[in-house]
View 1 (tube, one colour):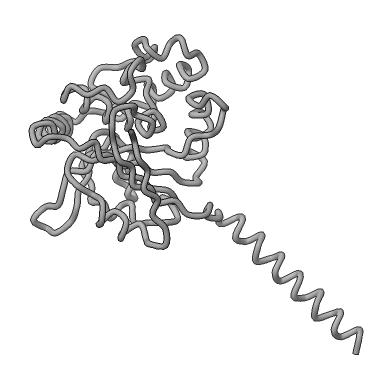
View 2: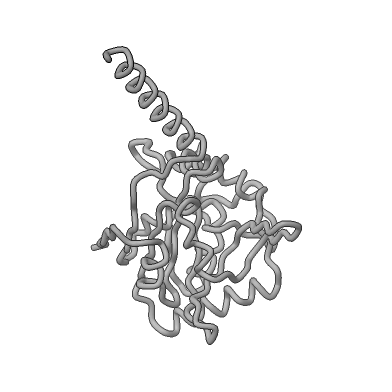
Length: 239
């Protein structure tokens, strides 16, 4: 039976430092347009049509001699003029930003040392061979979500040597003999599918109130200023 341990009142950093271990899977969700678009598309995964919580998934690699935990993931990273599009290694400090990553989870499948070694070996092999992040396959997955009969079939826009985030995690676990989403082709999977994996696992969940976007924050400040101004004018009139 799968269990969920909800954690509150701590930072992203403290949460990840406490639960990151080699072979565990990380999930993240946010409030950017891309995050919300993915969460909305994942409503097709839910019987009641509820939006998904997760927009990205990755594999924890473990702590290195530099003292930092690292992850292996397939992602799009933009740093000024430099763009990395594909399977890559990053420090978990990337996920410390609570404005971007408003919801986090760590999934522990209680893997054997042999299974963990397989995951890391296969992941690093994809890093070395520069497997790409496939936006095209992501579109194919969106098509399959709207047509459930396609989910078990090969992604209609599949490309060789390409994997988006959840397809990457699914691929690695498949190499270790584990199917995280039975009946769903790896390249038609979503982070929400991984969160609902039927095989036994423990989920550590860090979930806080929905963070406000900059526009929402501005609206709140303007409303507060307007109320304060009205209150001041009322006080002036009454005197």
